[in-house]
Image 1 (cartoon, each protein chain N blue to C red):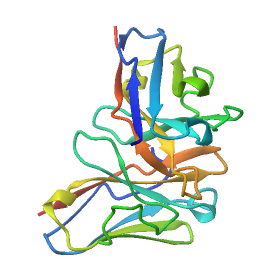
Image 2: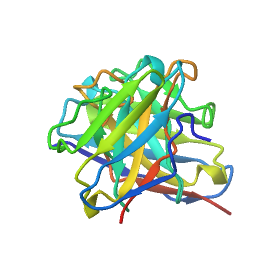
Image 3: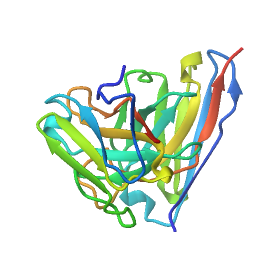
Amino acid sequence: QAVLTQPPSVSAAPGQKVTISCSGSSSNIGNNYVSWYQQLPGTAPKLLIFDNNKRPSGIPDRFSGSKSGTSATLGITGLQTGDEADYYCATWDYGLISVVFGGGTKLTVL
Amino acid sequence: EVQLVESGGDLVQPGGSLRLSCAASGFTFTSYAMSWVRQAPGKGLEWVSLITGGGENTYYAESVKGRFTISRDNPKNTLFLQMNSLRAEDTAVYYCAKEGGYCSSISCYEYWGQGTLVTVSS
């Protein structure tokens, strides 16, 4: 059972917008920065968002991140079929003294 | 160009041991924390362990504490994971990952290797 809670799946049509939630607690999201990763089928994860809402160089601005209290959200606009992937949130947990990941959300672009 | 290349994955019997390596290049290895993250077949990502740049501090997931040991050889730009008392539930692809130099959080991994498969089975 993952420490951070994500919906198992989300779906939307091409061109639409989707959000993926990540729920935690005061020992993790509530007091630390959140990162988001995209994992395309058969590949290693790729950093999409760091420090809650910043994008690494090369990540399009269709991807955005936000955090409020003990929850974080990944937003993707202008959905493309190439966005079909698994998405994971991650942060540090002060209680567990470890990095924790969400269980992952599978995005389907219908 | 940053490269992380894992090796050492294999089929091993329950109770056995294995040592994974991650050869790093393209950055100043000693300046960055490194981690191991694993992914069981069809499952999500699970953080395993982290070591600071100088090797002075290490952290482990509860599921591997006391069985796995992370270490690094900075002159050789190589990260290791010694895995003992292996169990079936340790079967996974093991990725090494580099801390993001521009990140404020220790959970920010800027680069990942391609992964190496560890299978624990009799």
